[in-house]
Image (cartoon, rainbow, N blue to C red; front, side, top):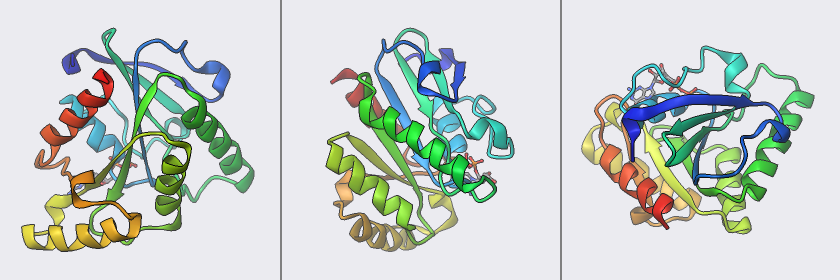
Amino acid sequence: LPLEQARFLLSAHTLAQLPPAGVPEIAFAGRSNVGKSSLINRLLGRKGLVQASSRPGKTRCLNFFALADSAYFVDLPGYGYAQVSLAERRHWGEVVAAYVEKRSTLVAVVVICDLRHELKRHDFELVAWLRHIGRPYIVVYTKADKLGRSQQERHAAILDAGLNIGREERILFSAQTGQGRDALLAQVQARLAA
Ligand code: GDP
């Protein structure tokens, strides 16, 4: 993967604004502030490419990053964003849902949860829904550096049970230390190549 060639392509507010389906895409989803921007930046090895959540305007779009002509990484809007109105949330939910369900070139959704926190309803629902529609997903528990090694496994086991997944189905990650980066890249690459 030409990670070093990643560049911002476009922000889509509507399905009509999506780039033409061409190269395979990996989408990234998670609650607002879960560490999604940091994770994508760490994956790409590019500190400031994906803007952090402090830029609310941008975080409500589907942000496309092109890895040369090989793949797109798609930063989905963070869910559970408190400041937006219900109507707006519904609109974004619909756009994102339609994208995830219908996009022909989407090969997997990376679902990001905080290793330290309890799952929220939206986390369960997202994984259950992806399973239901048959869209492949990769589960990542991030901010692992905030816990010691033994605590990491203990917390992860609780989240595994909540999401009903096996321990081989998720990756412990840290944008700070780079823990799990190689494992996640390997899974992403496998999905892109499939
Ligand atoms: P987003 O809203 O999901 O894109 O979240 P950000 O990537 O902006 O991260 C939210 C906050 O969590 C920021 O203050 C980050 O510095 C912090 N953060 C993100 N990932 C990690 C991580 O792996 N470890 C630690 N310790 N902090 C993180």
